[in-house]
Every structure is written in structure tokens, then in C-alpha cells.
Amino acid sequence: MHHTLVADARRLPLPDHSIDLVVTSPPYWRKRDYGVTGQLGQETTPAGYVAAILDCLTEWRRTLTPTGSVMLNVGDGYHQRTLAGIPGRIEAAAADQGWLLRNRIVWAKTRGNPDPAKDRLTPRYEYVLHLTPARYHYDLAGYAAEYGNGANPGDVWTIAPERGLSPHLAPFPVELARRAILLACPRSVCTDCGHVAQRVTEPSGQLDPGRPQARRAMQLAAEAGLTEAHLAAIRATGISDAGKAQRIQTGTGRNSAEVQRLAAEAKQVLGGYFREFTFGPRHTVGWTDCGHDASRRGRVLDPFSGTGTTGVAAAGLGRDYIGVDLDARCHAIAADRTPQPALAA
Ligand SMILES: C[S@@+](CC[C@H](N)C(=O)[O-])C[C@H]1O[C@@H](n2cnc3c(N)ncnc32)[C@H](O)[C@@H]1O
Image 1 (cartoon, rainbow, N blue to C red):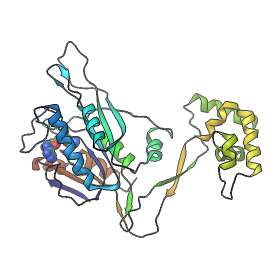
Image 2 (cartoon, protein in one colour):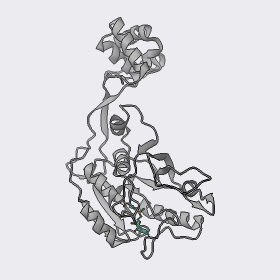
Image 3 (cartoon, rainbow, N blue to C red):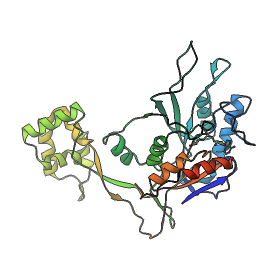
């Protein structure tokens, strides 16, 4: 499903609890005139702008499912020779209204437009604020498998800006929207009970050879002839092997004496490198299922959709998309970027 609507981001013609994730980049404060009546971004003060963004957040919250969240791309700007501090003001105002700020992701740009300033450095980053009213869907394992070699890849996204399809608009890169969707938009949702499919993973036993500690751990294990059973025992007992071995289950209750013996043997050989085998990459073995035979694809909303970048990313990941913009001309540009349908990733 790929819909575009002409509407104000503060008054969406959408039902309650119908959106899994909002990914968007609003007009920045006093940066551009989009030439459309009712546009956001022309407020006379930062406070007025922040209030308008908060009105948006309140409306978006109405449309979110119980596991929904918002990825909001915002940048700062200079006004009367000083940075306006817009992202920080949005964060504080959102927190006052009960939003949880789960991440302040830095979009580090690999290049930027020429800047005439002679007495300050050129801004080369923006933020993506991950805001949520409460619990939210998050697929860190899927994201980490793609961007982190299994480990948590951190909150800096280094992405080249894309040249706009229209100089009038300021699109964010497809890659930025893609990462946001991969992290926080479910692949499928049960239309009967609302169950959100969660990735089920298992430790793969493979360590990341890019990390020196992991390489050393593998070398020690090989030299001592540790078996797959030893490595499985390490994973079963966890990091604090002493206490956890009593608690972590193997399926039959507690770890068997044999598992504890193998883990102790491995610990003897590996010393501090033991823990390397407890947090290695995991691989996907399936998805949780509620048993109902009724599902829809995850649904992404961009309420300032412009040229439809979020829609391109959503289609690439097999998610449904709703793009809203006050300016009907944008939707025409967006339609030319006809995305190829894809299977849910
Ligand atoms: C920064 S651009 C979005 C760029 C977008 N990410 C893209 O890929 O092209 C902001 C968009 O917000 C729209 N806009 C401005 N005020 C709006 C409002 N109150 N409600 C909905 N859209 C609005 C503008 O027409 C413009 O297309």
C-alpha cells in the first residue's frame, strides 16, 4: 500500500492507532519558504516553532499503534548570529509532554554545501530524534546484523546527503529513512490481536574477526581444542558464569552439571576472553507468531512527505507507506519515484 494525501501534519485524516512508525523531516525553522498556505516553519520565534512541532507530535501520537514511535529528523540553524538550539528545545518540550527520547542519533554528513562563514565551522550534522510515548517495536538484532556485524552499531549514522530532486525541497537521504524503518517499523502486524512479529535469534557461535579481542578468543579456543559443546556451554552460562549458571535454563530446568563443567573448563583456558563467546553475533531463526492467520504489513507515515523519500525506503523494505504533505505538487514529484515493491525484510 502506498498512499499520498494532501493535508496538514497537525490534522491528519487518518484513524487512531493505525500507524506503526512516523519517519519525517519537517521544514526547519525559517530555512525555506515552501510557498504553501498553512506551512510550518515560518513562526517568528523558536518557541512558536517548537510549539508547532509539539502540535504535530500530539496528533501523530493519536495515530500511533501501542508499539509505535517517531523518528524525527531535525537540524539547527543560526538566527541573529547564534545557533537557535532548536533540537534541544524540541527534546525538552517533548519530554514535558511525556515523550521518551530513546535516542538522539547524529546524522553525520560526509559533505555539505559551501558555506560563506569565516568565523565558525560549517555545520555537518543533524539529528534524528527517536521519540516514543511508551513501549515500542525495535529490531536491534536485524539492524545490527546489517550495520554492525552483530554488535550494536551506535548512534552515529554517517550518510552522504543526496542531491535533491527539486532544489526547493530538502529531502533526507533514502538511507536515513531506511535505517529508521529497519529499526522501528515492524515487518507485519496481526489484524486480529495486534501482535507485532518479533525476530527470534540464536547465538551463531561465530565471532567478529574484525575485533582483535574476538580474534584472540578464537585463537585460544582453537589452541586448547575447545569443542562446539564448550562454546554452547559458555553461551548457556552467560557472562557472570558463577551466578548465572544456576539460573540460566537449558530447556529442562537449570544447566546440567555437564554444561557447568564444560563452561568451567573453557573459562580456565580463555580467562577474560571467555566473555567474547557470550555476546557474539546472533542469527535469525524465525519470527514470533500469535497463531492468527491475519496480518498486514508494517505501516510508515511521513507527515511532511515532500518528494517521498520515506516512501521509497518503505517500499524497498516491504512496508506500507502513507505520505502527507500540504503541497499537492510534491506528490506529483514523489509519484515519479515509483518504488519497486519488495518482500518484507
Ligand atoms: C523538509 S521538506 C520534506 C522533505 C522530504 N523528506 C523529502 O523527501 O522530500 C518539508 C515538507 O513539508 C511540507 N509542509 C510544510 N508545512 C506543512 C504542514 N503544515 N503540513 C504538511 N506538510 C507541510 C512542505 O510542503 C515540504 O514538502
